[in-house]
Amino acid sequence: MKKCVKRPSFLSALITAFILMLVAPYVVRAQFAFTTNNGTITITGYTGPGGNVTIPESTKGLPVTSIGDYAFSGCSSLTDVSIPNSVTSIGDSAFEGCSSLTDVSIPNSVSGIGDSAFAGCTSLSALTVDPLNSVYSSVDGVLFDKS
Image (cartoon, rainbow, N blue to C red; front, side, top):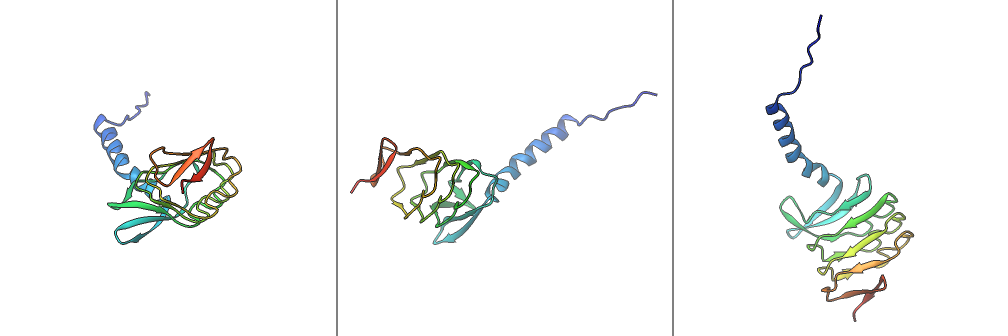
């Protein structure tokens, strides 16, 4: 007797893909703990697997403007982080102890970087600052305050 293998229909596959497209942004957002303050979002923690991480520009319709104190601290599996132009401040020890972090590009929107923000990032060989940043610059990978 010949067995029949039921294959998903095109419509079924299309519906599954559509559902995944709707759910994926919420799964990504679920990796971040955050607080709301005066209509903006501060990232306060990270629970994802590490690797290459992209901080969202907005969450729940509100702009992400800050990476809070200790938000990624001790995340030794974090290798790269993309910071959106909506972020204006990076808190104290925000990435402290992220020993696998190799690339952190500072966008032109960041006007405040807290104490020890990148302390213990032993794999971080250089910081790159957007040339249009009015407060910070980088020369040969070293972060400088323009004042």
